[in-house]
Length: 269
Image 1 (cartoon, helix red, strand yellow):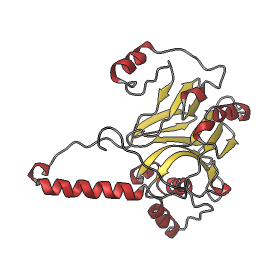
Image 2: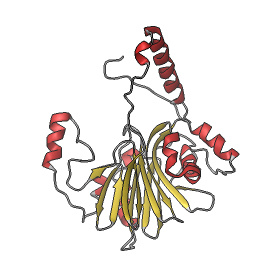
Image 3: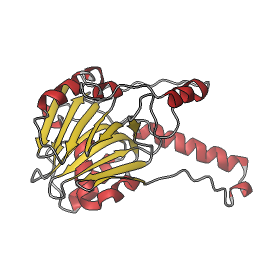
Image 4: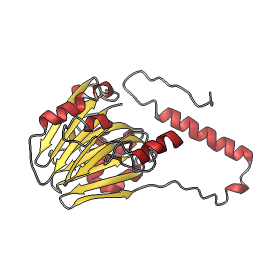
């Protein structure tokens, strides 16, 4: 569990260091091992790190590509990063860390927003492309990792936790009665809403591209509930497939440079 935060403002360049430092400071519990900042023109990125893969300081974020024109802050794990890295190295990409984070940088260079369809993992990320002067935000398919944002007057602030957004004293602090009603009814806010007015969550399975022309949000994945031919399968086929999926999901999550623990909840145990 790491924490990411950022600010982008195309109309009023300003020194973002103090505010970004306060934002990640409020999320220190998410990443006690290291923190870092990157600022360039309209954008500022911040990260607080919990080290899981590549424990050296080389793995501290923000992380960049070879010529430092693309930068990323990332919270999560990409379980198939070794396979992705091998393919990228064969295409000529050069790495300076052993992290899954750096794989995302080069995958973005290679595939653009099509990268999301290749990821097996849980994540919230922000990628700044200096050449295109665009910021890309993305969240995993089912929203395991949180990502909240506030958009006002062509300035966008984002963070892993809402209270980091409130590090800005000018940020509006007003409860949203409709969303709070959803929380008491359904245990969670509905859609992109949060308990606070004008603070939203990037929906699971979506990415947002931000430029000086504004913010555009798109889905890259939706659940598929089709059952073509499945009704003809035997019980043993279903059991074999479920067993294979659970074994693969467990094995791929054991890739780490620290001891791994697991817990079961919800009654399955």
